[in-house]
Length: 179
Length: 444
Image 1 (cartoon, one colour):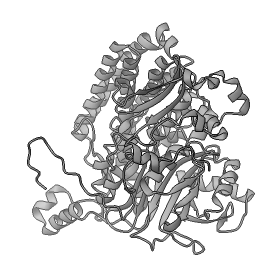
Image 2: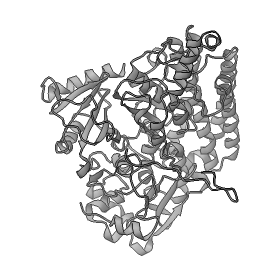
Image 3: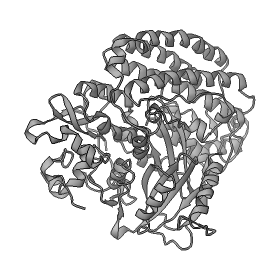
Image 4: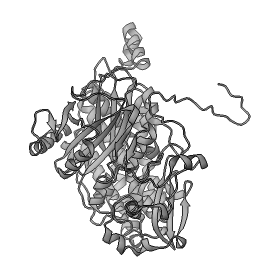
């Protein structure tokens, strides 16, 4: 139900932008279970956000990362987009059109950085910090890119697939350690 | 980008590292504007106008509030820069409850997932279960039976009532209305009693699962609902007498912590905070899920975006939820409470005694779990605190490859610096309370 609304809304937007069949706002478009997904390049991203903001996508509702280290051959990417290790996933919402749009940005492991969206969408402040904290993806232009959930002196980025979650033995007073 | 601090050296010096308010003399112009408006950008004129901003460094004081302050709703730490009693800047420091639940979610099967996510927002646990289950169902591309849909609506609305009653209690307590605290907890306990009758637990129910719900409604559930629906209206009228119409309460809340709709949208804020500004946005109405398009209810909005509006909206939302619950009572269809799909649903208990295959099937589902097709999906619902979303990436196995929860409190907390700017430190408590953060959800 929400997805039909999303499609209708975004379709109306699409006619205003580039009306190429599998492109929306100049970025490759795919559908994932009825939800609209854009696959812009990192270079396109700041300009695309500006276009989307003008088109009425006034809120970034969610921004997070995914580490595809152990699942590189995922489907859902258009042929023109080369998969990289990291993805930054941005969910935008257009309140007036009741439409949602998801951006999937490919971030290579050896240069894990992306432009910050904070100037247009100040609400990404905490989300970008969380993504930095959990995946080590840096956001250029973020005023305070520090750890947000983990302690400041924590080594590593816990949601990376090559990070060993490990286990800190719980030491009760006087009790012998059982592992 | 001109960095305001060198992260590596700071990290080496102290375990608190860069978790500090940046000192004023190192903030460059543009970033200073950002800091002064907390996270929002102020226009040049506004910045000039704010004579608060011209306070010299030596006239201000930085104090820590929390993480163990009783009114911080758990373990929220705020760094406040004060000039006299006025708050100039504020920085929330979070992470004290971080237990890596998103990582834990990657090691649990889809059937075990709800036990994990239900512990995020512990005041409204059914909502996180629902968001998770809806996302998994989207990936599986299955539709749950009618009755399961309506049970889910009934239970989440009951949960919304109990969550807002908890807000009434804590909001009263934070502002010194201690009797309100007792009343709020008392009524919430009644709501939880119903949830316990159905799910077996007061909190962390693990009741809504991919494919439906864990068990059918027990005999006599209608009486439990009706008892609550009869009990609440006079009690809510008492709240009105005690709080809404009381001059001291109004003095304390009206005009405190004001935010505008534009600022809310820019910050990604949802829920009662956004509605308090007069912006009618409720996912139940605007992007309906479950069967919310078949029930009749109002989206309550405020007009000033202050603490009083946020209080009044939540009180009114209890009444709206009661309306929905009553309609669930009337329209509850007969049928199955979970999908009869062999792939997802374990066989009925009676079959296990007589059939070896059923036993194996049962065993397989509970040990290995069921496989979910490869893909990714984001589904969101309206929790008592705002948009609660779940993003799952599946690699085709029986565990999520990545499970992310978009927690409304986490995003809503970003309004604190803005709401507090220029307010008195005594109002800080009222403002934190009106944002209604649940720290388990903030830190996950």
